[in-house]
Image 1 (cartoon, rainbow, N blue to C red):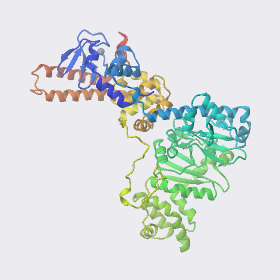
Image 2: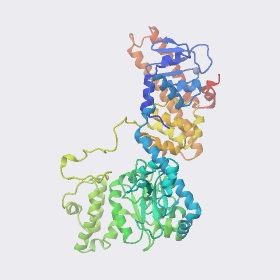
Image 3: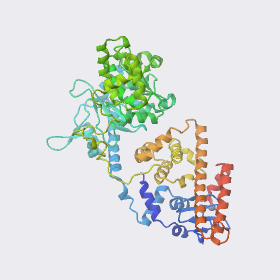
Image 4: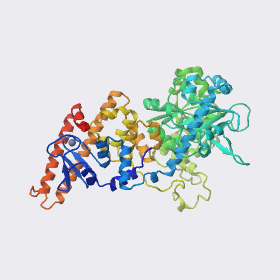
Length: 618
Ligand SMILES: [Zn+2]
């Protein structure tokens, strides 16, 4: 849906704005600008300027402003997309060629995944899904919960999904998504998930991007099977349940991390709605960054009360301590898992357990060496040996020294001694886990570190991120499209980031936010997610914040024009003096801009300016 930013920039660069406007407005040269009677409101004396150098037009009468795209949009009442297409055709820019192959592949994966999601979901509620539903009720899941998490069922047949994908014309895409596999003999495909309960894995925005499948019955194969990674699904940057948990994580500033899908679902059903789970993978810096974006200030690990749970703490600790996120550990009674515990004890029980959680480092030391300084020498050495992977992951710095000094106290050893003991053989500094661990070859040659770039990222037109205020403006519109009506100054037309403008425009046209999130290029998506955290939850506060952002953006655009005028004035011969025609024109514009600025500052984005600004009515 979205036209890439660089293509929009190309269109804007190629279109001759003066020529375009001249077809509809009689323009006269005025210094380096052109002046005419505004086509957007009725006026006798011209106050409409086109400044080719800035590729912008501006009316001081009705405050209309923008570039070639905004001009076409306003004049013909066209959508942003249509305006870009018209201008591209005229300027000879091929938009079709711009579609990035990776975006196309993502689109294909999405189509196949959507078909599969619906297929599995339908089957669960059909007579065929009876056994799966029975299984779910033994786990105590209500129908509402099952629907909320979009659970599904894959029957034992070999070609249930394959046939559906074929019928919908997306079988090949299903293969790319790893949902069907190629037969070894002959041609044709068969289903990857068979006789399994299907757990959709979703993006934070709620789109299904992969599946987990839990074995039902006695078939062979692993208990859990997961979709393979794709352009849609990167498991080291995905947390299960985050789409359901994000609001509560933001509210409580805390995320509860569990290991299994059903632990997560069970906690949500019990009312503990800030729980997320790892998707059968190690905890990475990517997961922690994701939680940080959701404003989780604290992490609580809720783990089984047995050896597996203890092992899990040791496994998770390196990334957590290295990441520096304050983490506490809540341990369940022996033999319990979060799911069964939540079902029996309810949210109050879970909460009191979470309240008792202790800091990760203390927990780690207590479980490894409960006797503390009184332990035997051998005991201490054994505990240290188990802690080596943890300390090896800690980069030199505050977290490391704090951890070592706490550890020293616990063991009754000096921190320096510990450092030497733990170093032993020089540990390689562990950085955030690399994405392609399968890279073979010697690690020792020192010159190679960091020399590699991921092979599957084609070097293409790098999208730049928008600035924070523009991103904030867009994030509010994504959260609440109706706010668009309050942008009476139409600052949306003047956004400097073309990609963001395309997104805002698509949003205004009713393209679903989930699709927009998906399609936003990485740089844009990241900026938007950051901004998303700042969007007020309260409706009235959000409206105020939006008006405020509009005002600031407008003021910024005005200031930019003022600076432009300053620069031009300075370049003219006899700078500063009101001697020649050009400087006089510029001064006029400057006075107008300053007046406009005062107006915006005083009346903000009040209704009064609103009726004026929507002046196409003439
Ligand atoms: Zn006007």
